[in-house]
Image 1 (cartoon, rainbow, N blue to C red):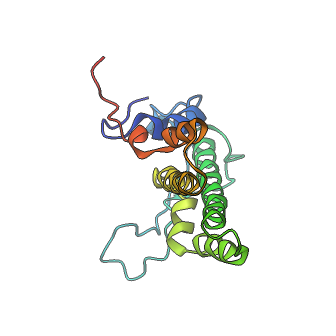
Image 2: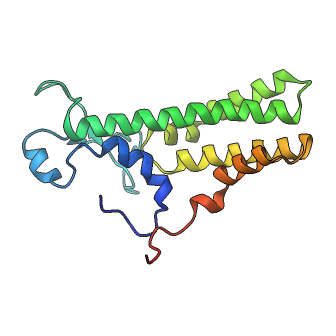
Length: 178
């Protein structure tokens, strides 16, 4: 699967596994076969001249030629579901982080999770296919683990967890020479 050289390998590994069985090399041919969603003619994504910028759906999903849950359209739906799961885990980890900081105040933890869950930009990015979802999840998970280390002490298990989640592991350049 070709990818930009600037994307870290681990950030695209799981989405690539989700979509690996779908042929994405011939998207133009698939579009002719109605295997990919049609572009939304009403979308004004990134157009500063648009009077209204409220239609942010890049594709139209219709049932004209059977189920849209096949081929590249299925891959898009799976990636969006993956993004939603990452967003849900981020919200749970936000609650857990706030509970770790203020264990005697569970309502503050609930408020922190609700605050993140109802941020309009968080909702928008979580519903889209984006690398930002995994980056946000890993950031919150790393902060949670750092607070646990500060409060409960450093152990080998916490060090291993922090190492897996830390940003340096996910920012390594994927174009290293072999």
